[in-house]
Image 1 (tube, rainbow over the protein chains, first blue to last red):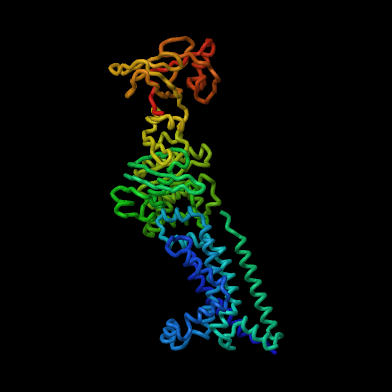
Image 2 (cartoon, one colour; image 1 turned 180 degrees about the vertical axis):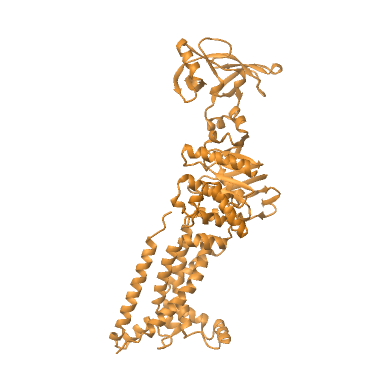
Length: 222
Length: 356
């Protein structure tokens, strides 16, 4: 039987959107944690790390509570867009996003903090705003480790199972991602069907990890 | 013109002693040298002026602008302070070429003006051929000039130079001091220069602030400072002074003289203010102000020669009790031929009282 490649494409799509969103949100959080002192900083740090440690199903449960059809957010979404958020590919993006963010925030924060302080000091004295400083100085100098973290976050998003299953469900052709399709096929005794998907995901992920490691290692010489 | 009163406390940490900066600074156009041991608060002062650290108390005025006022809660951010700061490690952005570094700093200028200024600065600091190079492709002296060019491109109202001569060889240092002298004459803004080699920048400094443990312990023009360091601690810090312990035998304020006993010999001294007969006082003199003789005479004390050191311009004779005398090579040779015993002549006006 020919392999149905839809789940893989869906996974790539979901992971791509999730990674782009995670990059935006993650960089902002990382900048906040690296540069600013504010009340509740430790709490924010803990919360962004939490998805890394919590069981994915627990995460999925919380997501259901927050964006489910009976929650305030869920209703508002349904009112505005005309259809529920849960059990769509958008919900899968949300689940992947939650997994990608801790990886990005942690690495990006460390990368931003490792940029020598004197460059930021010099930049400020030269009249640069914090915004300009971030885009022209801090980010370019931290770009390699951040790119590496982004690659890993993409790989992580690609592979989410538990949380995605709980809030996006397992609707073949609509929300069935690669990870879920593989589980489904094996569960129903069609392990052979999942073989190519498994190989494809493994090769893809190995490639991403290889690139991430290369990026991490080749630091710009000062 | 800049006027600043600054105070900042650092609580002692597990691995650091506490620190308390408390200084008052006033400087017009020209070079003001901040001199003192490391950790005495010189760089912290520059940081406070630039807005990179926030003092606990005080006020900073630059021309007619208030940059900082703890009482009125004014704290102008660093980017609006118009301070040209040249950092110890240059802090050139490593991912930008020299030209891009300058462009980053000239951001606020109008486009055409910006281009003209960049070309002008590159030319002025002899960097035109290096415009397209990255900082790691530059020599130490070129990095130095590039960082100064970058700091000055937006016409700062105050210039802060943090140990710019560090790590440069003597030729480049001389080059740098020439450059600073030129800037002093062309910019007409206050220039603060943190340095360890005081003698090299004496020629260009208008004023020297001597720092110690977070305080300005002495302020004087360079020539004044070398005449009278004020305290024994500063004399030791500056180095090159003879320190004498003397007993006051008599005082004659009317004739502005005194009678002193130094190393067991009676000599004439200068007028000593605030002293009484019998006081023991600390005096200092410069090696080049003392003279050598081979016979006894007025204001001469016998001394035991330890060794002599040939210097390019003079000979330094070192005697027991840590007294040094500098004299021209010719005189030294002549004296050496006739010498049996050595006598040091201490002119009354070479002696200056310093606090312990």
